[in-house]
Image (cartoon, rainbow, N blue to C red; front, side, top):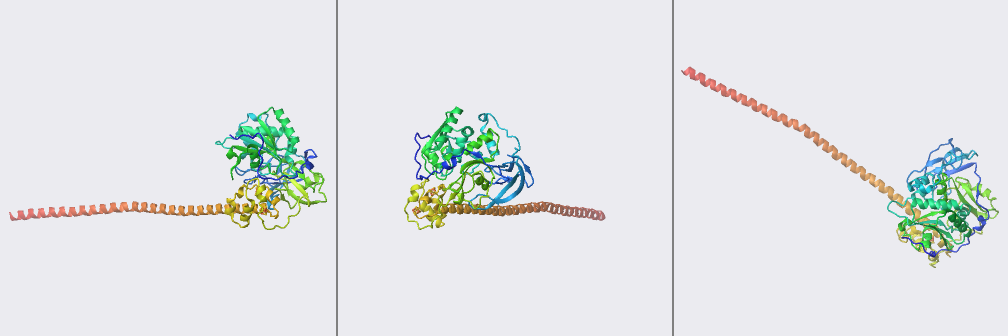
Length: 527
Ligand code: SF4
Ligand code: SF4
């Protein structure tokens, strides 16, 4: 049984970074304006992209499914507002690759009219867990902490597995990002009820909310909500503020002292982890009957006039949010999606907000100075000291650089959470995480190629086997037919032989009869 520690453990490595959260928390959570044109990507989650259900010219209502899940690990997509579908095709999406992907574009009619009046239920705890999973899947909910894994899949631990501990990840550890904190302060009851629904769906034996100790307001709001629910089975545990304490494996370690096995999942040790934003979305789906059409986004950084947190419709162009925050400051230098450690640069602010957009960061040159030229590794070991996954970043770097993909995996590349701590402290300014991402992409590509050639080989073998089988079957059919033809022939020969023998017998008998008659005649003549 996984046990909660009385005092949270210190995670390995990590960095103390300036939080920069107060700037965006000065204003209360507000709704962002609904734009005229929304671009809704069909793949905003881990897994198979959703398949479009609409075509240009279709009128849609708010919350109407516009794309269906195309596999178990997939999620449907819903219209964020009412209007008319103008396009279904490829448009630029927020992704490190900068590529385009299939999207549905909706021109808002300004009415924001529901497709169907949402039908919720009063007592979600009376529902069977499978019904909750079904509602969560139909609502298109994915992990809102940034990963985007379909939540319904994570709500199903499987018949063999017991969920000993549900961890609610409220440790929003990356600088500038404050969307979870804003949500916990604005809607703590929603969050708490969402936690209770998820705990019921998983039949979790214990529940703990892990929150960084620099969020006293959010902690206070959650405590009040907990008292209002009258549920004393949920614990709130403050973990020391240290980046990346909000990493799934790091938070589980801080709360339990247990390590998730290398390349394993939390459920391997009986734990499931969900983000606070995700559980609030579960509440809205199950109790209010609303699909996931919006999320809370932090808009912050020295390049933003009035940083804040906004409730944003999925598909809203980033420029609409920048405008809602007073526009850019003259110091603006870069635009990132995500935080300064794990986020990625965006080439344009016309890209849409997606389900996994937790933060838009417009930074000044002072906040994110341009990268300095990389120097040779001096083997100082600073990168290993700060690695929260207990890896050897310099070894990973050497082997990734040398394209030795077997070796880089021997050094547990896939346990790297790309937190950026190693690159942050590297005195040689080596962009270490870029090397790890490159190695991971290459290995995935090789794996895809291997699977493709395995499939092609299996298909070829199957074809040869089929041809061989058909040949054998043909030969067997021919042999059978020949046998069938030969059998009557043998019969004919026998019949003929019998006929000849009978004829010969008849001749013989005749001759014998003739001889007898001749002898009798001769006898008579003699007499
Ligand atoms: S911190 Fe940089 S220079 Fe030092 S060992 Fe790691 S990669 Fe090499
Ligand atoms: S990016 Fe990877 S290797 Fe570097 S510190 Fe983080 S987990 Fe360790």
